[in-house]
Image 1 (cartoon, rainbow, N blue to C red):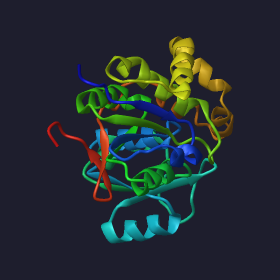
Image 2: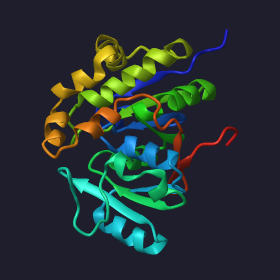
Image 3: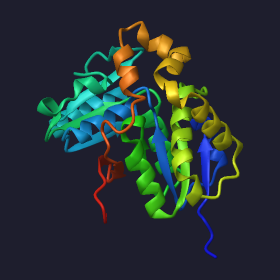
Length: 244
Protein backbone atom coordinates (compact mmCIF):
# COMPACT_ATOMS: atom_id res chain seq x y z
CA UNK A 1 0.00 0.00 0.00
CA UNK A 2 1.47 3.33 -1.03
CA UNK A 3 1.92 6.02 1.60
CA UNK A 4 0.02 9.21 0.98
CA UNK A 5 1.88 12.53 1.05
CA UNK A 6 1.31 14.79 4.04
CA UNK A 7 -0.51 18.14 4.06
CA UNK A 8 -0.16 20.90 6.66
CA UNK A 9 -1.73 24.35 6.95
CA UNK A 10 0.48 27.15 8.25
CA UNK A 11 -1.69 29.98 9.57
CA UNK A 12 0.95 32.74 9.53
CA UNK A 13 4.43 33.32 8.08
CA UNK A 14 5.58 33.61 11.70
CA UNK A 15 4.96 29.86 12.07
CA UNK A 16 6.70 28.71 8.88
CA UNK A 17 10.04 27.97 10.56
CA UNK A 18 8.37 25.30 12.71
CA UNK A 19 7.71 23.15 9.63
CA UNK A 20 10.12 21.17 7.48
CA UNK A 21 9.17 22.40 4.01
CA UNK A 22 11.94 20.72 2.04
CA UNK A 23 10.56 18.27 -0.53
CA UNK A 24 7.21 20.08 -0.25
CA UNK A 25 5.05 22.16 -2.53
CA UNK A 26 4.29 25.44 -0.77
CA UNK A 27 1.05 27.14 -1.81
CA UNK A 28 1.35 30.84 -1.01
CA UNK A 29 -2.13 32.14 -0.17
CA UNK A 30 -2.88 35.87 -0.01
CA UNK A 31 -6.55 36.05 -0.98
CA UNK A 32 -7.02 39.80 -0.37
CA UNK A 33 -5.51 40.49 -2.89
CA UNK A 34 -2.02 39.56 -4.02
CA UNK A 35 -2.49 35.95 -5.11
CA UNK A 36 -5.88 36.75 -6.64
CA UNK A 37 -4.23 39.53 -8.64
CA UNK A 38 -1.31 37.31 -9.69
CA UNK A 39 -3.68 34.63 -11.02
CA UNK A 40 -5.79 37.24 -12.80
CA UNK A 41 -2.86 38.98 -14.48
CA UNK A 42 -1.40 35.69 -15.72
CA UNK A 43 -4.81 34.38 -16.79
CA UNK A 44 -5.25 37.57 -18.82
CA UNK A 45 -1.98 37.01 -20.64
CA UNK A 46 0.76 38.66 -18.59
CA UNK A 47 4.04 37.08 -19.63
CA UNK A 48 5.21 36.90 -16.01
CA UNK A 49 4.75 38.41 -12.56
CA UNK A 50 7.91 39.27 -10.63
CA UNK A 51 7.16 39.26 -6.89
CA UNK A 52 9.45 41.53 -4.86
CA UNK A 53 9.55 42.34 -1.18
CA UNK A 54 10.54 46.02 -1.24
CA UNK A 55 9.34 49.11 -3.08
CA UNK A 56 12.86 50.12 -4.14
CA UNK A 57 13.41 46.72 -5.73
CA UNK A 58 10.03 46.99 -7.46
CA UNK A 59 10.95 50.35 -9.03
CA UNK A 60 14.42 49.15 -10.07
CA UNK A 61 13.22 45.88 -11.63
CA UNK A 62 10.43 47.79 -13.38
CA UNK A 63 13.07 50.01 -14.99
CA UNK A 64 15.31 47.08 -15.90
CA UNK A 65 12.52 45.00 -17.47
CA UNK A 66 10.20 47.67 -18.83
CA UNK A 67 7.57 46.07 -16.61
CA UNK A 68 4.51 47.58 -14.98
CA UNK A 69 5.17 48.32 -11.31
CA UNK A 70 2.44 47.71 -8.79
CA UNK A 71 1.93 47.82 -5.06
CA UNK A 72 -0.20 49.28 -2.31
CA UNK A 73 0.10 50.06 1.32
CA UNK A 74 -3.13 50.53 3.25
CA UNK A 75 -5.27 50.48 0.13
CA UNK A 76 -3.39 53.21 -1.72
CA UNK A 77 -0.93 52.93 -4.61
CA UNK A 78 2.61 53.44 -3.32
CA UNK A 79 4.22 56.67 -4.56
CA UNK A 80 6.65 55.81 -7.35
CA UNK A 81 4.62 52.80 -8.53
CA UNK A 82 2.13 52.81 -11.38
CA UNK A 83 -0.69 50.51 -10.29
CA UNK A 84 -2.32 48.88 -7.30
CA UNK A 85 -3.19 45.37 -6.10
CA UNK A 86 -6.68 45.24 -7.58
CA UNK A 87 -7.37 42.31 -9.94
CA UNK A 88 -9.68 44.64 -11.86
CA UNK A 89 -6.65 46.72 -12.94
CA UNK A 90 -5.29 43.88 -15.08
CA UNK A 91 -7.74 43.08 -17.91
CA UNK A 92 -6.39 41.29 -20.96
CA UNK A 93 -6.33 44.40 -23.14
CA UNK A 94 -3.97 46.05 -20.64
CA UNK A 95 -1.72 43.28 -19.32
CA UNK A 96 -1.38 40.78 -22.19
CA UNK A 97 2.27 40.15 -23.07
CA UNK A 98 3.59 42.41 -20.32
CA UNK A 99 5.65 41.93 -17.17
CA UNK A 100 4.06 42.87 -13.85
CA UNK A 101 6.42 43.69 -10.97
CA UNK A 102 4.43 43.37 -7.76
CA UNK A 103 5.21 44.19 -4.15
CA UNK A 104 2.72 43.40 -1.39
CA UNK A 105 2.64 43.60 2.38
CA UNK A 106 2.24 39.90 3.11
CA UNK A 107 2.22 37.53 0.13
CA UNK A 108 5.58 38.35 -1.44
CA UNK A 109 7.20 38.14 1.99
CA UNK A 110 5.89 34.59 2.55
CA UNK A 111 6.92 33.54 -0.95
CA UNK A 112 10.52 34.59 -0.35
CA UNK A 113 10.52 32.91 3.07
CA UNK A 114 9.36 29.66 1.47
CA UNK A 115 12.17 29.80 -1.07
CA UNK A 116 14.77 30.56 1.61
CA UNK A 117 13.53 27.63 3.70
CA UNK A 118 14.06 25.16 0.87
CA UNK A 119 10.62 24.59 -0.62
CA UNK A 120 10.72 22.12 -3.49
CA UNK A 121 8.21 24.18 -5.46
CA UNK A 122 6.24 27.37 -4.82
CA UNK A 123 2.85 28.08 -6.39
CA UNK A 124 0.26 30.71 -5.54
CA UNK A 125 -3.35 30.06 -4.65
CA UNK A 126 -6.58 32.00 -4.38
CA UNK A 127 -10.25 31.31 -5.00
CA UNK A 128 -10.03 32.53 -8.62
CA UNK A 129 -7.62 29.63 -9.33
CA UNK A 130 -8.90 27.09 -6.79
CA UNK A 131 -9.39 24.17 -9.20
CA UNK A 132 -5.99 24.62 -10.85
CA UNK A 133 -4.29 24.50 -7.44
CA UNK A 134 -6.21 21.41 -6.31
CA UNK A 135 -5.64 19.51 -9.56
CA UNK A 136 -1.92 20.25 -9.39
CA UNK A 137 -1.55 19.12 -5.78
CA UNK A 138 -3.38 15.86 -6.47
CA UNK A 139 -1.29 15.17 -9.58
CA UNK A 140 2.11 15.86 -8.01
CA UNK A 141 1.79 13.40 -5.09
CA UNK A 142 4.17 15.46 -2.93
CA UNK A 143 3.94 16.83 0.58
CA UNK A 144 2.06 20.13 0.71
CA UNK A 145 2.23 23.24 2.88
CA UNK A 146 -0.75 25.56 2.56
CA UNK A 147 0.90 28.82 3.57
CA UNK A 148 -1.42 31.61 4.70
CA UNK A 149 0.15 35.04 4.26
CA UNK A 150 -1.95 36.46 7.10
CA UNK A 151 -1.86 40.21 7.84
CA UNK A 152 1.44 41.50 9.19
CA UNK A 153 1.93 38.02 10.73
CA UNK A 154 -1.50 38.05 12.43
CA UNK A 155 -4.01 35.32 11.61
CA UNK A 156 -6.66 36.18 9.05
CA UNK A 157 -9.86 34.43 8.02
CA UNK A 158 -9.82 34.71 4.25
CA UNK A 159 -6.52 32.89 3.67
CA UNK A 160 -7.60 30.16 6.08
CA UNK A 161 -10.95 29.81 4.27
CA UNK A 162 -9.08 29.18 1.03
CA UNK A 163 -6.90 26.55 2.73
CA UNK A 164 -10.14 24.90 3.87
CA UNK A 165 -11.53 24.95 0.33
CA UNK A 166 -8.40 23.20 -0.94
CA UNK A 167 -8.48 20.61 1.86
CA UNK A 168 -12.12 19.75 1.20
CA UNK A 169 -11.23 18.89 -2.41
CA UNK A 170 -7.90 17.11 -1.95
CA UNK A 171 -8.11 15.40 1.46
CA UNK A 172 -8.69 11.92 0.03
CA UNK A 173 -5.20 12.07 -1.51
CA UNK A 174 -3.26 13.21 1.59
CA UNK A 175 -2.53 12.26 5.15
CA UNK A 176 -3.74 15.19 7.25
CA UNK A 177 -3.16 15.13 11.01
CA UNK A 178 -3.05 18.86 11.56
CA UNK A 179 -5.42 20.88 13.75
CA UNK A 180 -5.01 24.04 11.68
CA UNK A 181 -6.10 22.07 8.59
CA UNK A 182 -9.07 20.60 10.47
CA UNK A 183 -10.10 24.08 11.62
CA UNK A 184 -9.67 25.55 8.12
CA UNK A 185 -11.77 22.85 6.49
CA UNK A 186 -14.55 23.03 9.06
CA UNK A 187 -14.68 26.83 8.88
CA UNK A 188 -14.91 26.66 5.09
CA UNK A 189 -17.67 24.05 5.24
CA UNK A 190 -19.66 26.23 7.65
CA UNK A 191 -19.51 29.29 5.39
CA UNK A 192 -18.96 28.06 1.83
CA UNK A 193 -22.55 28.72 0.80
CA UNK A 194 -22.26 32.41 1.71
CA UNK A 195 -18.60 33.35 1.43
CA UNK A 196 -19.47 36.81 0.13
CA UNK A 197 -21.58 37.44 3.20
CA UNK A 198 -19.13 35.92 5.66
CA UNK A 199 -16.10 37.88 4.46
CA UNK A 200 -17.87 41.10 5.47
CA UNK A 201 -17.00 40.14 9.06
CA UNK A 202 -13.26 40.04 8.44
CA UNK A 203 -10.85 42.73 9.55
CA UNK A 204 -9.48 42.90 6.01
CA UNK A 205 -12.96 43.62 4.62
CA UNK A 206 -13.32 46.52 7.04
CA UNK A 207 -9.82 47.73 6.21
CA UNK A 208 -10.29 47.65 2.42
CA UNK A 209 -14.01 48.39 2.07
CA UNK A 210 -13.36 51.94 3.27
CA UNK A 211 -11.40 52.43 0.04
CA UNK A 212 -14.38 51.27 -2.06
CA UNK A 213 -12.92 47.84 -2.79
CA UNK A 214 -15.97 45.69 -1.99
CA UNK A 215 -16.28 44.39 -5.59
CA UNK A 216 -12.60 43.43 -5.51
CA UNK A 217 -13.07 41.43 -2.35
CA UNK A 218 -16.12 39.60 -3.69
CA UNK A 219 -14.17 38.70 -6.84
CA UNK A 220 -11.37 37.36 -4.64
CA UNK A 221 -13.66 34.74 -3.05
CA UNK A 222 -15.27 33.60 -6.34
CA UNK A 223 -13.88 30.25 -7.56
CA UNK A 224 -12.21 29.67 -10.90
CA UNK A 225 -12.52 33.07 -12.57
CA UNK A 226 -8.80 32.95 -13.42
CA UNK A 227 -8.15 29.24 -13.35
CA UNK A 228 -4.45 28.88 -14.12
CA UNK A 229 -1.56 27.86 -11.86
CA UNK A 230 1.13 30.48 -11.17
CA UNK A 231 4.40 28.84 -10.21
CA UNK A 232 7.76 30.29 -9.29
CA UNK A 233 10.69 29.74 -11.64
CA UNK A 234 13.97 31.67 -11.80
CA UNK A 235 12.57 34.76 -10.09
CA UNK A 236 9.28 34.88 -12.00
CA UNK A 237 5.77 33.63 -11.45
CA UNK A 238 4.59 32.13 -14.74
CA UNK A 239 1.76 29.84 -15.80
CA UNK A 240 2.47 26.20 -15.09
CA UNK A 241 1.97 24.14 -18.22
CA UNK A 242 1.21 20.42 -17.97
CA UNK A 243 4.40 18.37 -18.11
CA UNK A 244 6.71 21.12 -16.85
